[in-house]
Length: 295
Image (cartoon, rainbow, N blue to C red; front, side):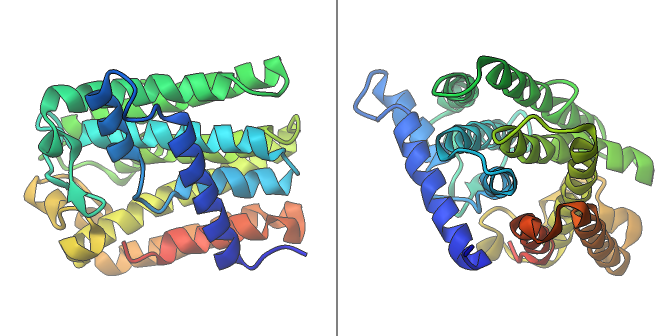
């Protein structure tokens, strides 16, 4: 009998936290300051949405826990590194992340740059090691690299930086966020699923539709929260998108239409899971979590 969603989520989050602590070098290992800062950036914070997607998709295909743990940690390290770099003065220049000072504020800019570089490298070390079929692991490494590179997360960030002050069309805004946010969420789902089996074209197509819907929903809700929540609730500086004159769904569509879009995207995600039946209930509930979250 499966656990209820909230219990399962807590178990998965704890599993991810333990694995992160295990796979990021301890702070008493040289270079100590760098390792301390890496652990500061990645541990004790965040909702772990991407690892949760890894675990939920892996559960759907009965994936072994050891491979899932590695995939979950790898994708979270990539996410953590992206936040460290995103917060730096040369990017979004933010002083608060997950309710605590950003890495470049807590340490310094050079350390923050190295933390991001090292977390990215560590992600691929973790994903490439351990048990499992070598060809499967190679495919997983390639998937994560592509999702985090110039045709994925980094490309989306480049478009974001180049779009400050511009009036993007809805299609342009969607493309930016499919790369910046959606690519890594899609990788999380597929990494979890690939940990369990060789996927059919039909299964990949359904998971792609699901991932596209939750990826866009995640960003729409982010834009809504940036416009409506306070910094204490968010754990980061609220209202920064408007202050920095960035194009968002709220600035383009308005608040009411943005909320309606988030609901529609959640429904699209649910519909994409229908072929998997009730076994996909954790992925179903994660779509709800992404849309209904308050931070």
